Structures are given as C-alpha cells and as structure tokens.
Length: 152
Image (cartoon, rainbow, N blue to C red; front, side, top):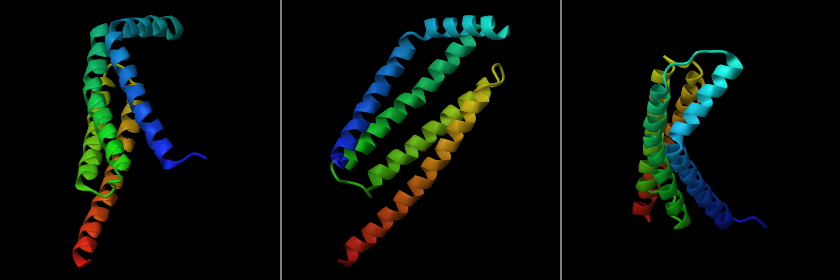
C-alpha cells in the first residue's frame, strides 16, 4: 500500500532529479541551444536570432528555477517533520509563487524574439496564480491554528 511517507520520499527524490536535470541543462546549455536552433531552422525553415538570446533566457530562467527547487525541498522537509500549517511553509509557497512570476516575466521578454515563449509565460503565470491561492489558504489556516492554540 502506498503511504504518505512514500509519497513525500518520492517527491523529494523528484526534486533532486529536477535539480540534476537543471544543472545538466545549464552545463550543456550551449550545445542544447545550438541543437535547438539547427533543428528549428531545418524543420521550420525559420531564421532565428542569435544564440546569445536563447542562452540568456536559459540562464536567466535557471536562477528562479534553482530557488524554486530549494523552496520545494524545504516545504517537503517541513511536511516530513509533520509541520504543515506553519509560517515557514507560507514563506516557501510565497517564494515559489515569486519564482514562477520571475520565469513568466523572463519568458514574456523572450517572446520578443521567439513567440512560443508566450506559452511558457502563460503556464508560469498560471502556476504562480495557483501557488498564491494555496499560499493564502495556508496563511489563513496558520492564523486559525494559532488562534486555536491560544484558546486551548
């Protein structure tokens, strides 16, 4: 039977896998951009701007991605310690939301030279909105729990 402990362990493992994949993308960024540009020119017959624009987007978006993975891991660690409705989790969710907004802004700016970045921008902004709502729920639950702790 699949238990909550296994789910948390799997989530922490996946955060580590995504961290490794992000490091791999950053290390292989030059090769990935060259491959993408050569593939796009061949398949779509579209002349795309210089590689440095794509590399700038890749590395700029990596910064909030690293921060998001860090805060995800902290959130999971708190849940593993059975600390659910605590201010630290609210702070993690707030930071995750801001990371998504940062990626959305980077992709919005990058859409000036490659229009499909608008799709990533919409996805990141939508995720930021969901995280803000979850953060507000957690914040309200923290306030209710603090009030309940005072009455007991």
